Length: 199
Image (cartoon, rainbow, N blue to C red; front, side, top):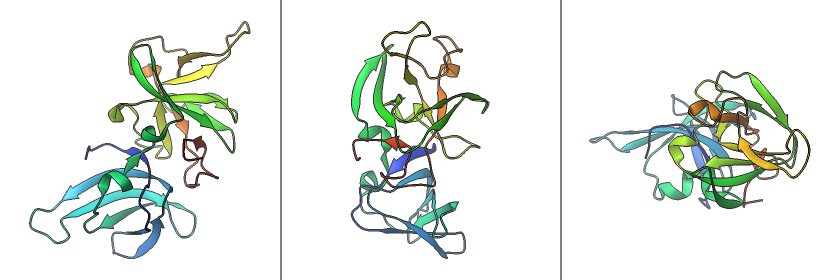
């Protein structure tokens, strides 16, 4: 698995226990729960051979780092990236994108430096890059998710059109991307900010 923070949703039917560094249970990941996948550490001569590092909503409802220890039998099912469950797929400006909708509450859209671009109301369409390394989560703002485009109405009026998530960055370079608030630690389809095909 790749070593970058990923916005994930579980497709695993059973509940997966998450523990802290002292092996104390802090919460669990259930079917259709959203969470942040950090990385995996491999131990060639240890049992269990892998430790998965995640961030979840813990038993107290707080956003917390934790670990999944042991052999996960179906990694793709548990660590399914949210970009795999978009509402639609399309190509725009040479990018393969997945469409999502803001749901449940308005969210902040932020530049790479964490300055605010806009507040996106419920119903706003956004798009993330289908390439996983381009749809990462924030390094310091750990609940934010990198997106490529937002469907916006033109300044002079008219039908909404897809524009770069950061509209003042131009059409080249990484700064055209921006970060949107996922709504984590709310982590269920009925409480998360990002509507997917699971809803």
